[in-house]
Length: 228
Image (tube, rainbow, N blue to C red; front, top):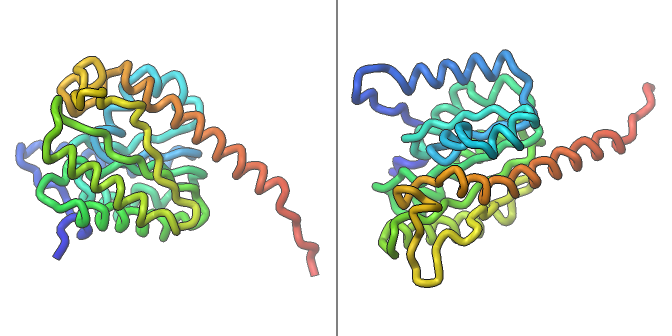
């Protein structure tokens, strides 16, 4: 049985109920606000909300950030199935998850991501969904980085045939020609610096704006059927 594709709570190891409190806060935000864009996932999404690129390009698009740093695919799946995207009508949903699934194979991680996509689609079949490829990690080439490459390749192949879903690579080239990653881009060789966030996520904001324009235009151009 694939643990990455079975919805699961995060174990409250520290006894502070922090994860569940965040989930409850996200539920309140989902009900009180009317976002056009929702980002959900792990540390890549969570840390984005503390950057200049978020303040400068995402806030104005009425975005909600439902990132929890330690989440694995099964945890995001649980949150999706327990109301976080249910009580809203977003035009675009961004999913970034899988980097924390160290114990799972690449194939299992992709199955977990696919389960998240299926759950999102069950609530929002007409929304545009963007799945982010995972960023590389480690200063030098290592087994985890190789697995990430496998996940990204499998993910792209699996999602290719699905409508209204696209896989996007935001990596501007963090792996240098000698195979190393610079700490100015990923400060601990896993998490992006503020500068790297600007490099990687500015193009995502452009894509989101393009998708919103296309959706808005499609609604305007849809003919209204006369009443019988």
